[in-house]
Image 1 (tube, rainbow, N blue to C red):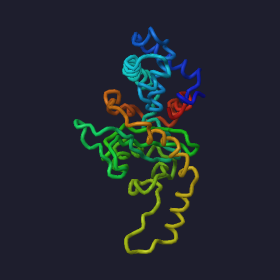
Image 2 (image 1 turned 120 degrees about the horizontal axis):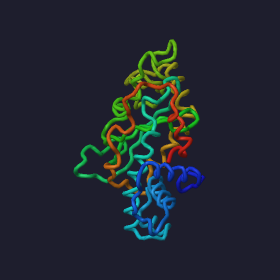
Image 3 (image 1 turned 180 degrees about the vertical axis):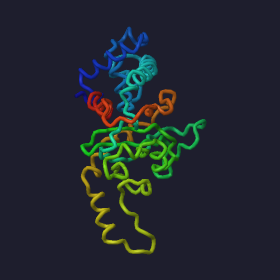
Image 4 (image 1 turned 30 degrees about the horizontal axis):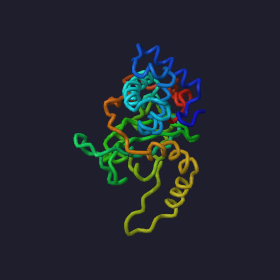
Length: 269
């Protein structure tokens, strides 16, 4: 697997084939780079948020060429892979998921209010990430302004709206694990200590079992720590993030091929 893209050559070739099937490709950068290199350049930019000057030097092209390639192919890749991005309706309600949130840093855009996150003390976009116990990303929410609390962002995503008839027998809610930010949402979370009262021993045991769980402590944070700490603040690319692009109106499916899309397309790129 290529460290710069988190995709191997076969996966990049599959992505190129998907773009070919999706429609006519733009001629942007075609004189300097072939399709494979244009796609690789775009994926590297999305994966590592590298500056255009660095990418221009790496691919031996001009910075304006890099800018045009990224602008054209980011939207193409998003459209070509739209059906492979798991929606909340695709998530198996019997699957144990570890949920956490992060803020992707951006500049403080004047025409986009509410970006400042009081928790992270920076401006950015709030995204929620759901991982399997093995650490594979199962779902990523649509971005919301950084000022939105984690609980509100998860509630708005619809992730917890599982119909009762889709749950396993005797289960009252899907098993979702999170930290104290998600208390009150029906998830498995640590118990918050009440002011002025000693914490019950049973609550201490439950909190320790969650906080010391290696799956929660390492796997969920490992998957999105690169997103949370980009090399520089994210550019303004809201036009490439259509509203509700991870949610589709259709019947809930217990098992759906897109639940495994992260394996085919290289996981957390």
